[in-house]
Length: 509
Ligand SMILES: Cc1cc2nc3c(=O)[nH]c(=O)nc-3n(C[C@H](O)[C@H](O)[C@H](O)COP(=O)(O)OP(=O)(O)OC[C@H]3O[C@@H](n4cnc5c(N)ncnc54)[C@H](O)[C@@H]3O)c2cc1C
Ligand code: SF4
Image 1 (spheres, rainbow, N blue to C red):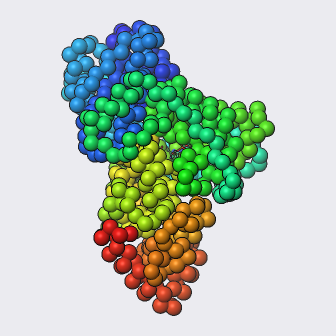
Image 2: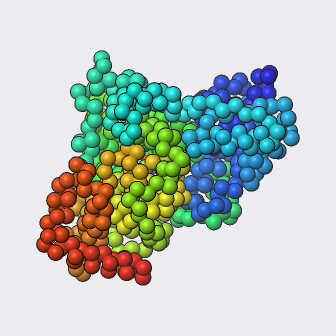
Image 3: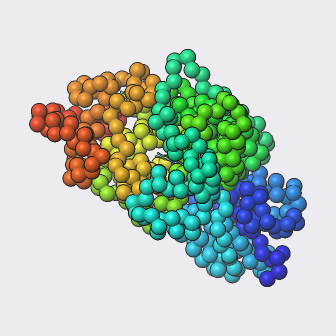
């Protein structure tokens, strides 16, 4: 087939002009983008999430046209409708698309193209650091399941040569996680967040989203990039200004500080506006070129980008189908309504839901140790929390929420987590300033106004004893459970949990 009939089909999460088939297509080539709307009607997504996807695609269309590409931009209810329109116009074309990381999407797209009378070639997704084949080779050579992030991460460091010094990790250690857990002093000011100028096209798209779809989220200013230039500026600003502070306070949470010193790059990388290696290279270069960038900051972000993000993609691939429905602890509860309304007396949850409502974002520890922790302790069915994350976060897609929420957050499967990430108020108090303003007492387990996390924590361990007691990493916790059972304290805890459940059913938690 002549090259002019081999047309890149760029998905809304692949908006990088230099990567994949579109990056190799000469100027003047035809490029296809289909803006499909039906998915956005299926649930209440955050307004900003839909805005960045649709505005990102429209901006990318205009950017390609300015560079001289012949862009077919089709708005349709479904991809199937869009493809029919396309092949009516260009019956001799063959489409070429980078594989989407979402489960079965390559097969689904191939079926849709065939039904529209066309042909599709699916090629590897170059918007990740590693390849499927390399991961599978590694997985076969190592102990395979359960996958262990730390082993994978070290292998990725060696493969990429990032932060390596003659075969050894720079600084002598692979992982500085224990230097990422400080709480800042009271007078610490987090570095500023770079403001973005959004143009008329983005403003129009945002207004159209509000009119067209039933969305969730506050009508706040959009703080997320929708163009590659904006994403590049965010990265530059992160590296120049925010990176030095990232390391020590990576896990800390403050009520009036939604961004702390986080990268705020997840939505841009997941849309394809930035390649993860662009971020890694800029961060590593800053470490080598500047004196003010500590290793715990640099290694901390790089671990997320070449470690956790890549790991999640592959674990998802290996554990699907099934991971999205996994529920090894048989958690039966519905997601409490306050995840949507924010109406709860629990300050940590109230402030975190407020952050998500305002911008479609909260940082990692709020996601893990507040939202997912509570849901796990409460016994929420993991798929319900996964749905919630998927709808409400600007950086959420099925491939990345599912392993993060169902497995890391809720210990749904065991494909990589070696124990549940759960804690009582103790951890939240140590890493945040929420408890000081809370109606509940962080140190009380039972009785009036005792923090719900405390009784729920002991109840969680007690009710899941059959599955968790034999886990050697939980041994210490079960010695406390034993003493609470023996002293009769567990009966009071059970009574407190029953009361909490009654309160929740009346919207009084
Ligand atoms: C319950 C739960 C749900 C999550 N849902 C999502 C999600 O929907 N989408 C998403 O991209 N990340 C998700 N994460 C991972 C992580 O919390 C976000 O990537 C991060 O908070 C994004 O903010 P940031 O750009 O400021 O990241 P930083 O904390 O500054 O980290 C830098 C970058 O590393 C990458 N990264 C870090 N951790 C992860 C991870 N565990 N998985 C994938 N990428 C990672 C992101 O690209 C991020 O931009 C989730 C984590 C948990 C515990
Ligand atoms: S006391 Fe409990 S509910 Fe309140 S903020 Fe602290 S951990 Fe959250």
